[in-house]
Image 1 (tube, rainbow, N blue to C red):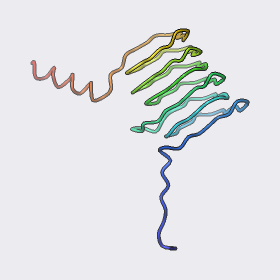
Image 2: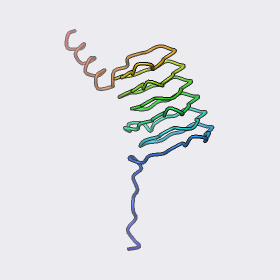
Image 3: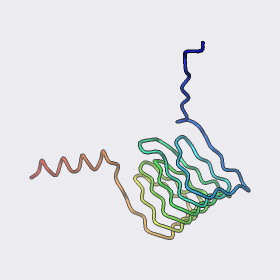
Image 4: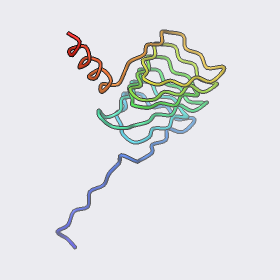
Length: 135
């Protein structure tokens, strides 16, 4: 009863930044982060996590986003780096460059910057391995 410690996993936790809320400062997280308010700072998922950020229609981010997966339907003023999956919904507006592995863009989504395909690390290692075999 008293000797056993419980461990709590937050990998499936969801954090909401509600409309009317402004967070100033960098955010590091895992699980899911949903933004309806405003974040002024960088958003970074814990390394090697399957974290997802969702910028909802009224959500705004003024800073860089580095995550595995992102679904954006609001405004991002900064670069977006998605190592796994990126969805840009119809109201998405990104003022910055986008690095992605897999992207889905709806009609009406805007990116005012460069789109750069970045393969996942496993793909990069496989390509490098094939290149060494051909030599």
